[in-house]
Length: 218
Image 1 (cartoon, rainbow, N blue to C red):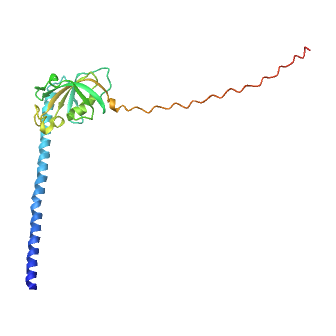
Image 2 (image 1 turned 90 degrees about the horizontal axis):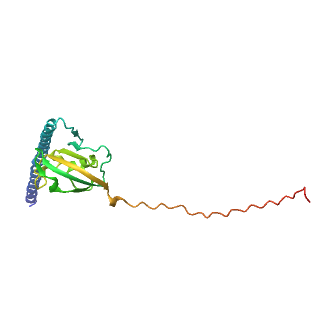
Image 3 (image 1 turned 120 degrees about the horizontal axis):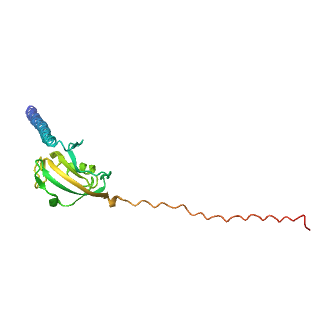
C-alpha cells in the first residue's frame, strides 16, 4: 500500500514539474518577440524622421534667398516679418494671442487663418502642437514666422483626426499679435507694513539764561 502511494506521489510530482517547465519555456518567445518588435519600431521611426528631414532640407535648399534657422528640437523656421524694436517673447505662464495657417509639406493649405480664427494660448499650460509649444516662445510681438515641422513635432502618428493625416510634416505660419502675463498668476504681493509711527518726543525746553546786568549802568 505504501508502495502504491509512493508511486502516485511520484507521478503527480513529475507532472507538476513538467507543467512548470513547459510554462516557463512557453513565455520565452513572447519576451523575445516583444524585444524584436520594439527594435523594429524604433528603426522604422528613425527612418521616418530621416526621410521627413530630407524633404524639409530640400525645401530649404530650393529657397536660397530665405534664411532658415535650425533648432535643437528638430524643426526649422524663417521670418516672414521681423520686428526691429521688440525684444521680448512669450514665456511660461503668459497668454499669447496669435493667428496661424497650416499647410502640408507641399504647400497646400490644410487650415487657413480664417478657418482657425484668432488663437489664445496659455504658454506651456495647454496642449498644443509640440513644435508650436516651443516655437511660440521664439516669436516677438508683431512678428510673422513660418515653421517647418516634421511629423514628430506636429501631430505625430495619429494626425489630428480631421484633415491632418498620420506622420505628416507641416508648414505652419504664425503671427504673434500680442502676449500678456497670466492675470491668475499675478498673486497679490503682501502689503509692506509701514514702520510704526513714532510719536515725536516733545522738544526739551532749554533753560533761559539769566539776563546779565549791565555793569556800566546802575
